[in-house]
Length: 217
Image (cartoon, rainbow, N blue to C red):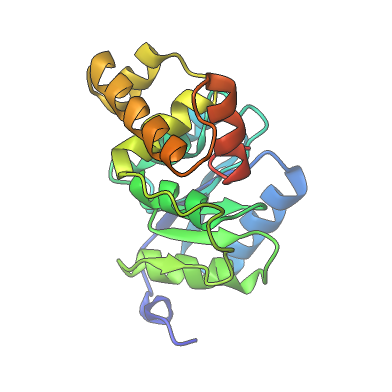
């Protein structure tokens, strides 16, 4: 695949790699350094806060973010992506259990690319090439969503964070809105699922629903 990366001769590209599998971290670090001209990996590990701090301290052209960190309760899909995108840092989201719903959540939170970790390693290069060139890139191998319920971007973000274990007030702080507005989004999401015959009244039902659709791990 022809890429504008081949034309880059003197621009440093700083990367953050956020993943909790050591072998994956090592493989991604090696691939980025070998395939992306003038690349530097300024952070590679599993701590979201440390990764963001490194990106802000040194500057970052691209963050590769695993959506299924073990401590998913503090870093649900939307929050882990938004932690970088809110600062204007381009994000490539990665997942071992991708779905169209999860991909949509990542996009709503600001991800510019989405990669299924089970597919060819070459896709990482293709995604990086696109993002560094200012384009989006979406893995076409992602499965279809498991329900036909259409939520708004804000409804989906609120549902994802709330279902992951966050309290309503914390979701409100993460989204920068009032707690009453979060409740409104959650009530509308519940109503849409219930109308489709999908149980979504309790927090446990929302958790199981979000998990089945790949919104949380």
